[in-house]
Image (cartoon, one colour):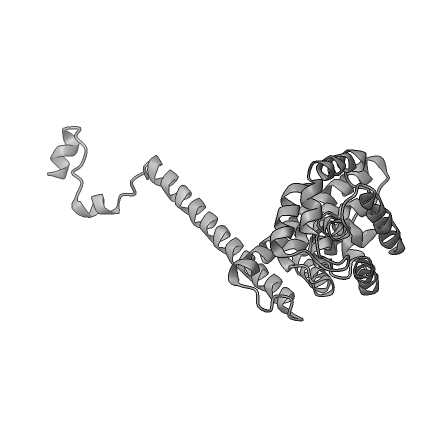
Length: 279
């Protein structure tokens, strides 16, 4: 039969075994799908690896904060805010260091922060000490560093304690930690005596506006930037105008209160609502 087919010029019949052994071309869409599947698998592996690395870093930063008891008593939300803000601060310094390196390479001038500043574990260890010394909540410290800069991380414990003592000498019944949280630049003044002298000058200026002594002390505790000249004459004019408008109320809430005594809760609430708006 095969001879007859060949004589007739017809192709030989293909047996089933021959058809099974024939290598057929792979469709293009199959190749593309396989490549896409490989790419997707690699992307998934990369994402999974990145997630594991982030989880490991998160746990290490939390441990660095917990060493020494900085997070003792903090709830889960406060812990999460503290760790995440520390990680964000490390990213901030990483970007800043890159800009400094570019400027140094392009212009040949400037300084570059040490690589440790972009290490969140190192940042957590430094901020932990600062929190213990100032009693400022750990979750507030990363924002303070962004305001003041890297100088805050270079402070010695002795320097920090001198600032705290100066604030307590100036306002014994005030909360020094709240003042530092509101005005972190107090920590980097060149001389701690500036806090005492400037604070006394600011208090004398406020007394000249006929503001009773308990209110003077409360205003300075709520707006410690007055010691550094924050707000300038504009802010002082605002306070003077408020004092003239509410002169009777000021005398009323301070009636029977000694100069070194705090106002009661309701009086403090009223005073801060009408006078303390700088922050």
